[in-house]
Image (cartoon, rainbow, N blue to C red; front, side, top):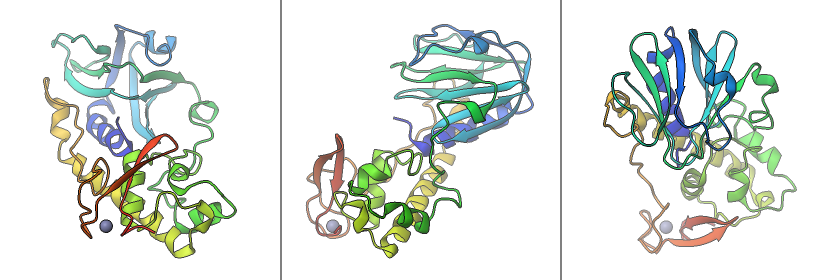
Length: 269
Ligand SMILES: [Zn+2]
């Protein structure tokens, strides 16, 4: 599933090809995604792209009269291609650009979304989102203050979009390992020092993943290429039964909030 670093990598990959360019029209071959593709997108004609932004895992294409909001869902990806390249089975949407290129959306499982908003402040999918993990609003003090009196366990709490956006299962597992915190700990037991370490670890891990993604940006221009996602260096995620890279103990796996949770009982407490 595309996580925040992959979405940011996608944003950086498509941005230089879209900003200042004009969307001539949208070719929607299958509008049945997670929700139906907005009618305003189907009716687009000759609209300049002003900016390409990101909020949580949503890509935001700013046009003169509103915004296209794209979510990649479970399996969505975006590529910039020549408009002469015929679409494949899972290529559901093309934004046909004035310079002969298309922004092509591929999504085999169709859990993604293409929505229209006249005004982002009134957009229901974006309201109620917590701070961006890489912004100054998200830091150890914020996490510590929010954690007081909370009885839930720390890993599902970190994955709650109201606490912080874009920390998916992989990054929650990895950050808790690096910060030496057991995923099952009740949130209110976090010390101030642990909250600071956790916030800075989350930032570091996401930044490193985005930097690694930067090296694959060329893939956005390959007609047969993969969508620019990258093999991540992981410490514990998906490594049940393997040796902890720090102490050599076996990595354990439990379900927490129905999500696979990997940890080392020796290094995390
Ligand atoms: Zn260990």
